Image 1 (cartoon, rainbow, N blue to C red):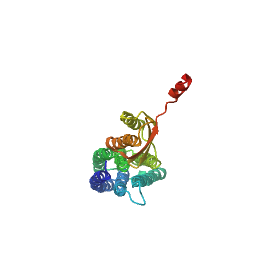
Image 2 (image 1 turned 90 degrees about the vertical axis):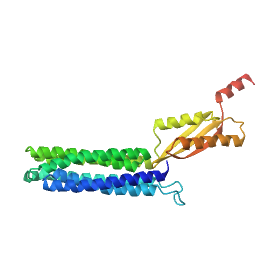
Image 3 (image 1 turned 90 degrees about the horizontal axis):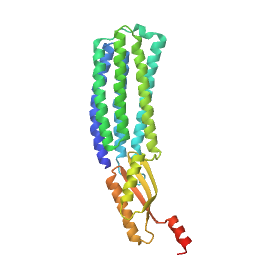
Image 4 (image 1 turned 45 degrees about the vertical axis):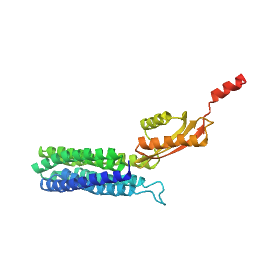
Amino acid sequence: MENTDLEKVAVKTSIVTIVANGALTVFKLFAGIFGASLALISDAIHSASDVFSTVVVLAGVKVSAKKADKKHPFGHERFECVAAVILAMVLLATGAGIGYTGIKNIVTGEYLNFELPKVIALVAAAVSIVVKEAMFWYTIVAAKKVNSSALKADAWHHRTDALSSIGSLIGVVGAMCGVPVLDSVACLVICLMIIIAAIRIFIDAINKMTDEACDEKTEGDIRDFITSCEGVIRIDDLMTRKFGNRVYIIVEIACKRDLPLYEAHGIAEKVHLGIEENFPLVKHITVHVNPYENKEEDTEIKSDGT
């Protein structure tokens, strides 16, 4: 997978989501104000933060797609994780603000002064659920295609917006049924969902910035491929580390101890090229060749005196 592919997918996905979120924000804000729903206004603010977060994601992806240079010889992939961290902070602040408003209205009893929500608020909440869930699937498919943590974070931002719209719908229905406090309670539910998503995004980004190893299945597949290469007797050591949306590998393989240097190099080269060809997420692999040693065989030889 080339970084240019990541950038193209990210730009296309981001443009679609920015336009959709912009339209949805205006619609929900209008419906929240004229439909007398605090929960829907809070939901509109969440959608507005989606527009900003998508811009942050796009900027992070474009920087991460830059080629390696003298100051960054390993590339710029971790800038995508930086974008994900910023997105998590934006989500956290948004959630905290919405939660504060909901708590304030409940504690002060201000919700009693609200007029009952109108049908337009109900319609807007329902439309938001459908649109945001569709945007989640559109973005998550693109994120998995290019293994982008920033796009995955943005996708989950859409999912939390869909969930918060469900909260808005419950709040509107509750208020229309004569339980106005539910509108403010819905704000607290929205707040909780946003904060949980922010923490999840933050942890995933930090893991990728601190050289977390690949999952066991991926490492197992890599091991199986290396041991299947002709000339490789065994793997002495294997280490993987995530670098943004890419992976680096260091492996020590054991080959026959009496091989000429050029043959040992040829085996290492086959492993190197094979891994990068069959595992698109791998940006680079370092292969070290050790002379094969079997201590059990050596012990048997010495005991026999031969």
